[in-house]
Length: 118
Length: 118
DNA sequence: GCTTGACCTGGAGCGCACTCCAACTTCTAC
DNA sequence: GTAGAAGTTGGAGTGCGCTCCAGGTCAAGC
Image 1 (tube, each protein chain N blue to C red):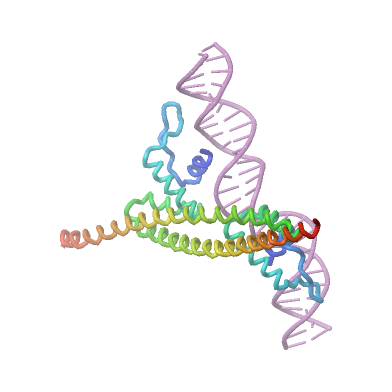
Image 2 (cartoon, each protein chain N blue to C red):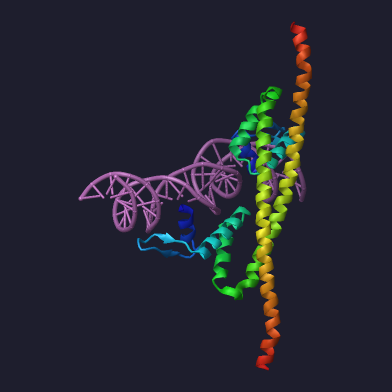
């Protein structure tokens, strides 16, 4: 909720309606927008760019072009990020395999060591 | 290079050998380790945990267990992250499709508008 | 010999994205 | 009516991961 107020402060979300007691009450639309924002954040989009997107959105349909452009670029960057992570994943797999080989070697040696000390 | 000196300061990498002029000269092993560190960083592992891994590594084979454990957990987190990104990716796809539909609608309307103003 | 450029040092500073704070109001339950 | 929880405000503070700085040293090229 602190984060929502922060987003509101920096203009990422418009001030929502208030209930009788002055509390924020988010509409379905507000929540949908917040959900999409979280999605963008998860992809690593910087807040700055999200603000730009939010700004464009206020112009309505006329800003569809630039907004689509932003999403296209973000999609590319997400695909690259996934590819990168998959590379890292195989490095991890390799390393983990290595550790397992070490374990197996230790397991083989242990009985011998026991024999030796028996 | 600033980053390498920073990593050295916080104990992520051991001080490398120096050349005659006092400059750092990284061995093959050093570079391999740095490469693996970058891989871990790319997966989003916090520096703190990387330091812990580096600390364990200094104990040699005897710390293989805990190190493997760290990598296993990191692998899980990377897999989750990839899944998350793929969710976001399909949201982006959906949004982009939407923008394309808008464009198509505009493209259909434009000739009519031209007729109307002709 | 003298400039130039790359590296050295310890330490300060920065950008990002929150996150927490004290002081206050408001609704809810008892 | 009163205690407590859950919101409100503007503003300050935090944690992370670098990144930059001033001032110094060194090796190489002209």
